[in-house]
Image 1 (cartoon, rainbow, N blue to C red):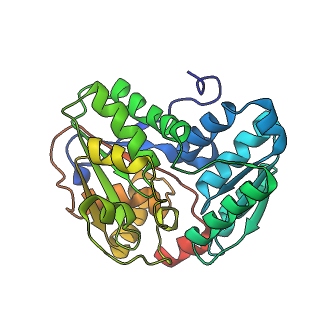
Image 2: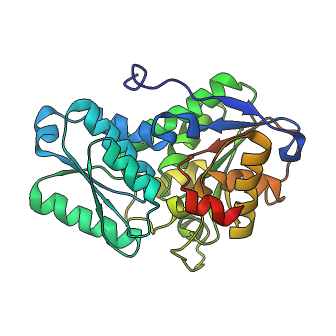
Length: 300
């Protein structure tokens, strides 16, 4: 596999019984760049030919995909320009710069940022790497599902956070192909319900300021993730800002992990009974740990 020389499998850690008698955390916050996004970004960048790398790479992201693309571009010696919404946490902006990419704050929300990145890609001849609407990115995320089934062969339920759907699309395809009866549940923040709205045909409003800023943003028209989710995901649930904050505190105080809001939504759903905490073998994907100090102070 393309990623094996660069990435080690992330830990699968047992939890106390309040999340269920047989629940495990898939700790993508322990990955390089402290996020699952490195998987898809690296898979996409490694697949580019030399000409595309020389022209340069551009991406739009609220942070974790940005750092993944920056890391991957640095690895192959390509220039990278990363556009990020103006509300992006400082820690994530600094992470992009640390890997040698140009970080540009643009737009009041992710949709404005993405539109500008696509314009620059078109006008300047850059290669755009989508955070979710790219088969290579989805395939990279799917390696999480493979690792879960390998480490927990009797898994009956997988809980995954949802934004544009790249993560849950990849994980659900991988898991369902190996364990067709395994239930895959997506979790949206109430403040960022784009995939929930598409999945159920609802119209819950989007709130750009959220603890789960990594999950905010609409879904690109025609995104490949939508039909994949409709085929492989069993259901999607919503969690509130208060539930996310409580899950972030729980992860720090009980498990000893610093986890960002978007990475905490699966734990929030189990901790607060949105998803029943039963005795089925369950894996919860903790998608990232890039939490800035300002947000940490706010939730404590």
